[in-house]
Image (cartoon, rainbow, N blue to C red; front, side, top):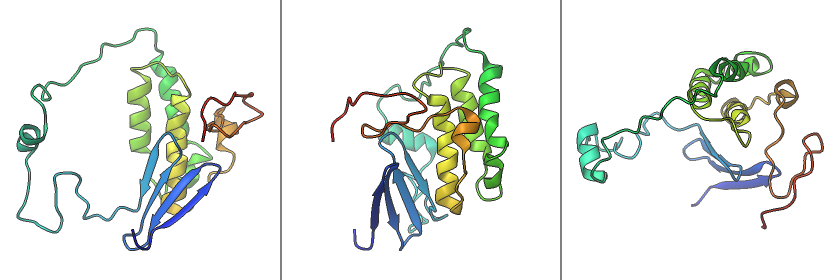
Length: 177
């Protein structure tokens, strides 16, 4: 695309789209999108054609395989301490995250974090992924860097195949460039 600015550092790859004031960041594990225009409506909406609308029922029937209308209901895992998980997610309400509240609402991140961690075991640092997602959104949307949030939360850096965090131990190289 013409006019796209690409950059890469030790945390991931950033693509800036100046014409739409949008930024996309990919860290090898997850993507963060910031600055989407309000007119963006998703897969089934078209802001340039207001006469074309799709209802959720029509959307399901035209784009889904049979049986997609049935939602999976996961059973509760009684081994998970939901209070502890919620406490972890609520760290986004406290400093240093509170420095970003004026620019980026933490509630969707807290809700997604609590919903996930109360139902599934927190393995492979998934609890810290929610904190990292909020910190990255704050950085992309408001250009605010949350200093030292990892040490206050006990979260290690996302470990890329080329990155070793001495605080969190040596991880052997299992991926190749």
